[in-house]
Image (cartoon, rainbow over the protein chains, first blue to last red):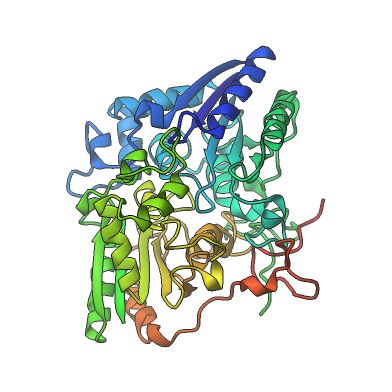
Length: 248
Length: 248
């Protein structure tokens, strides 16, 4: 497979970097081709702004998503956006690797999504989920945390990891058409000993073995929803996001 | 109340800006004092990085959260972080206002959280949730979306808004000790007519009336969790994050 890893960590001597290199080596050894965007090392600019567009359909006020679509069609997107978008389109597997900060991506990576998941390419004109612009590709999150596994379990202090990752898994990757593979999580990496760190590195290699045939997580296809944008009568909620509300 | 609004939108002539001004006027008219950080207008730098620290406890490799704590204690944090942190400490109500991008904050605001919710001030040494560093303060999210209300309902296409906002409500605001008030949501603002936009502006004013006595959303206090970091036996899950896992 062609694998594109987008990596966001401020420190080149971090455990996250060790995990990046271990994963890259494992993928290459298995015959996959790997390209990495190391956003901090590359000095990626993560702020979505008017300067991202050479041309403007609405010069009076910035409608960021509309200008994405307009400029995509006429070659007017900033060069760094075009380069990253080309890598996404080139790949068969996208891996987003980052430390979980405030239950989410570091701003550096969030800005990569804001700018690179361009309206008209990632989604648009009704295309999303199983009709999303990046359909036919797989995607996976690889995170390091400061939490132990029980904390992010369903009854855990921080809440279920599936709920924590819903905006990324469902709202970003599945929305844009990717088949989302189960995440790899290195728990509590700043607080464990070297033996446990070695186990996390080994576990990532194991997680990546046979990744090309792994079944994706379930997200509802567009056809499960009626014209009122809710699950059709008789369709049981199959995710943490589409569910019966708790309590009264 | 002393109200601190952190606002992230790239366009000064946006509906989001109109909502900001309407909210500010309503709060001031009710006798509250309002301070706004307009992150785009201020040119806020949202990337957490080594340059945020004048001194380093671990010079060989950047441990961002550890350096936050170390530099907080010796006056070594970057000036913009100190200024924002002072505003958070000053306020009695924090409002985060932003357009919902990819089910989350724009990178500009996520970076504000990454940098300003400093280890040692917002949390740390076991302080979190009801013992979090910003306890005694209220917080609220005000968002604009490109979705209609049914889409973000429990059986909706994008999933329940409570699940979408879990990383912000629980993982950021409640974690840091805030009492979290129900969000205000301006739905589908780019796609509705002027009458509906006026209704959204009026609705925000209504939402803010009496905000100082509004009851907060429920999040489990630390005491609900045992030493294994999961809900104690007999405590029923009261949130979307702490819950029984769905089917196999």
